[in-house]
Length: 196
Image (spheres, one colour):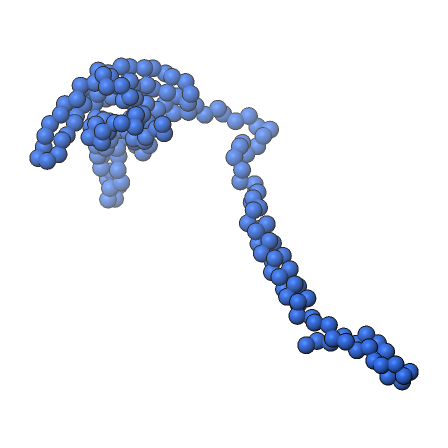
């Protein structure tokens, strides 16, 4: 135990006023306070945002930047059972719209039920040849397709639409050995799903 001398001496005939003060609770309180301060210091460091010179925006505000046009995207809507809707959009602007009759070509291949859409594949290929942006064999980017479906669309129909989109091919110059570049045929589109 730690003790504290509160003064007084034994010469004046009085008894001494020495008493012991329990220091353990005070030390415990100090330890808890120090640990609380250390922990909150770490949390306040984690809540900071790093700000540096690499922020979005033009590098020089005094120089006018060229306006970059957003790329066109093909949106395929298969929400109704009687037709597909092909919509070319550039940013938020609708460029063109085309309705394609929906005819399910269902075949049983072993235990698997396969759905194909040959008319959809032909229309998507025609649309890509007319409006597609990445047709040069040296261009490594692919055009984008956004697929819109409802929540009840069967998996086999989704795969059939994705297969129809992937039937459209384009040449792509690949990297070969030495100075020789091989040109290979790849799907023209990259497919993503829209969030309902």
